[in-house]
Image (tube, rainbow, N blue to C red; front, side):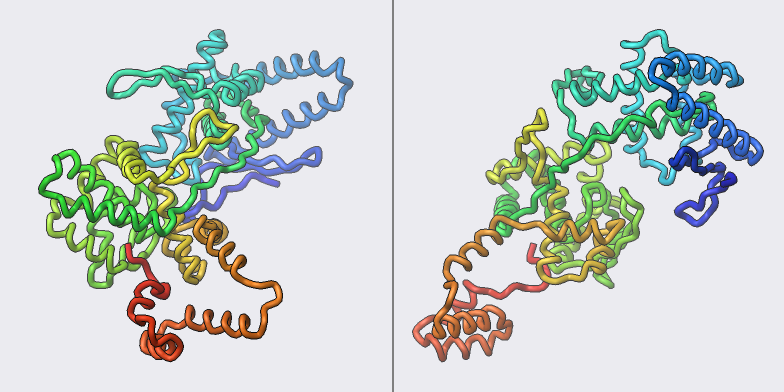
Length: 477
């Protein structure tokens, strides 16, 4: 297949040319890292030569492979013209060249994370292989060694620099998803710099990703949501007597909870919610999400509408919760810390230990509010397509996965219903079960009062209704 330009997400054609062909029963494709078509064609030809020779070497008997590979590497190196890219100049090149070939340009936080991945690998090379000075000298041997280190010992750099000084990272076992992120990010960095570094092969190409048995976040039980709501209400009722620090923390946690459980937004979108995103006339929040750049439209629940109206009275800048947005931009983990502290105060278990990880894993946190939001909507029958447009998932499968949580309470309810039944019910039991089902499904208060008064005149109908309030469409939090 001839070189071509790829159609990007915005509908425009890519600046760089791409190649795609099959050889030896495998498909090869990627960027040529050039905007010149003739150079792109030459790149594709050279790529085919390299792969064909590599296939020929692989087909040779084992005893000839090693010497053939050495000769092949020397031959290819001699054919490459120009200097390679010094290791110290790699990151500057990534920042300059990356946006032209990336499907999605990272946020400021994304760039910072990507640089951290590169710096860890760079520290590994400087310590373990100080003779390597340029990117072209990095081979699959070093990338395999580094990947092995990630799997057995965690990050290479153990001394972490922070505002308060530095500390030693004692984590020796990374989550599979974290290891995979390192491999994918470093592979992309080599792809971006391939042209300037004179690379014909990415040394991370043959590094397999780790099988990831993801530990899913749990959702908040109904009683846990009620505990959080009561906790926040009690704190607010005692506002005048609270120390300044507690008032500050209360403002953070209340905004995270009220906005999170009523919108299903991610942490960044909750923290950076602006007044321009809120339309009180239409009672809706419209915004572009930070993570996926998806446009979402979220109707305001009454609880959220009241909360935002109260916030608007003390409006000081463009953000709905100024202290929350400031903290997220300066110290994002501070938001998680305060939310987790509230859960600890309420004895809500937010972390669990797993045998394949050296530290506990968060299972209930700010993001769990998003899972809970989706679950509750799925439970009350909100169509997947509608829910997807609210939360901004890239696919309906992801949204559907969020709605399939099974809470401990629902499990207990199911077991209780089963234990109270009979395998072969008598006609009386069967009639009683039908009657109970009709009472449960009845949403007409007047009809329910009449029905209950006919059956059990001695029971207070009002007490029954208050204790057995039928599910409401929408949320109370």
